[in-house]
Length: 129
Image 1: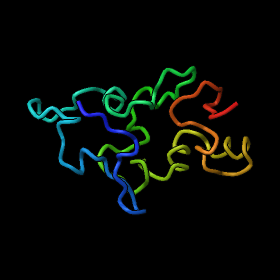
Image 2: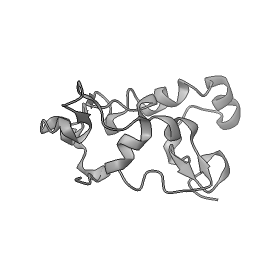
Image 3: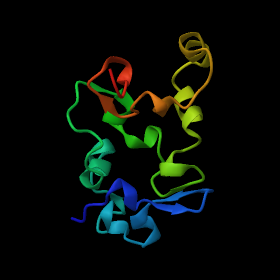
Image 4: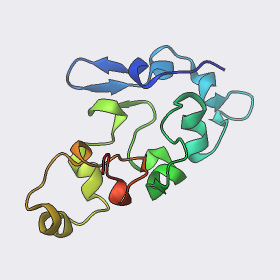
């Protein structure tokens, strides 16, 4: 099976992103055409089949990343970068209460500046200690 690097997700100018297999009509990368186009694997297992290096066995794994990438990402295309279902901050605030973020940080900021959204060896998914 082809391996698709994170950098190969094709950007559509500044307005969004499109998944490379979808853009090239390579549906069989994810779908089984012989079985009603069902996905060939479930949840995160499907995405990490090609997107290696996302979950690498670190101590702390973001629960949604361990279950299904589609909690935060769209499968085919998105108006946001990295196939996020909406802006990064809005994705985070879907689960993390704005009041808690404000209490901890004093403002709403780019969460990924300090936190890895997938996994980390540090508590709170910090990218560094």
